[in-house]
Image (cartoon, rainbow, N blue to C red; front, side, top):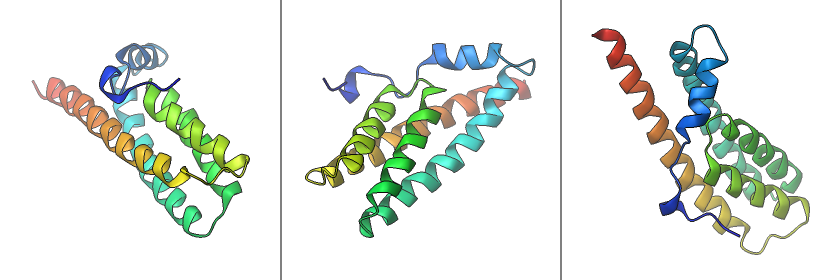
Length: 129
């Protein structure tokens, strides 16, 4: 069953709150790991595109698995779901429709990026006050 993009926020604020509570630096920690995650996400989405062009299904599966795991820290449910689907299709050689799911993941990654950048921007403004 698919989670519709419109019905699910790009990120789950409860997951971010848990992240903040897990470290003594709190919100500062979250702001820092958002930067790391976004850099990593950009690189991994790019890698999946390259792997797709080389028909590297094992690479696609491994990269999608990594995106799935890191997305969970921010409660990016739709991105996790799409990454899971890509991983499964690549592992099982189901290439029909794989590019369509990858395209959806790229769009969702942009949505997650925008939400996390907005969160980080709001946090940074709060520090400046």
